[in-house]
Image (cartoon, rainbow, N blue to C red; front, side, top):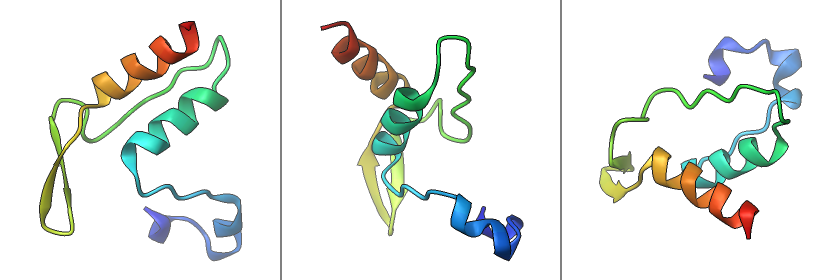
Length: 71
């Protein structure tokens, strides 16, 4: 994705390689009327990281975030 961002704008982009951490960060920075779009892996129950399948669910990450926020 960084290839599509102008070289002089890349210092304005934060890259988080851990998808669960990225989801938590995004949700924690969003406001009451913001829309958060988790694109690309929403329906899958795993991530492929350096050739390894790692269990992951976007839906579970989001639910866990809001459960923690409610406590």
